[in-house]
Length: 154
Image 1 (tube, one colour):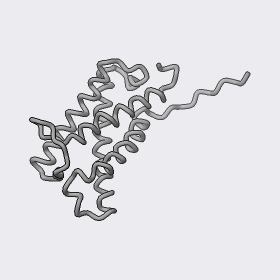
Image 2: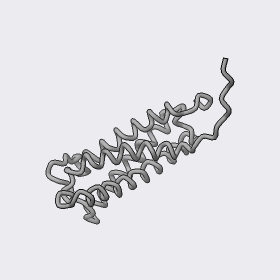
Image 3: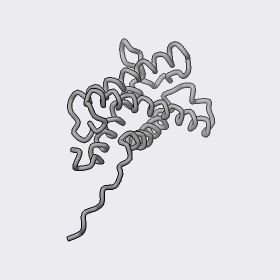
Image 4: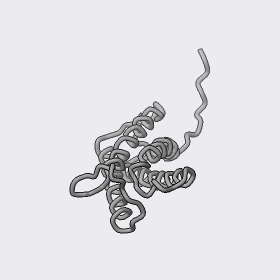
């Protein structure tokens, strides 16, 4: 029989969230780049830097949504035993921020524009790809965060 492992300090759950989110969001940003018309005339490095900047914004959204869900779940470790309230708050916060940010960036500030191939949501006019990004990547991140949660927390 082996000796029990000593308790090691865990890194904050936000660090795991940011690492996992970065990988998923950066990959998504690179793959959806052709759906934004302002990226068509950029060089390779410039395009990557624009996608990196967008990914940093995605990480801010992920953190805001996580903290809102932590308030709703009354714990930063809500992912260990995710209840319906924090999960709904997490996705609702992320989607709301995404829709508002896309609207302001496209319609008011003209920071970027959708290419003709971008499918748009009726009424909102928000690109479908950014909405799907917020649904797919965070779902995978939450699933993996749940798997990473120590057994004594779950």
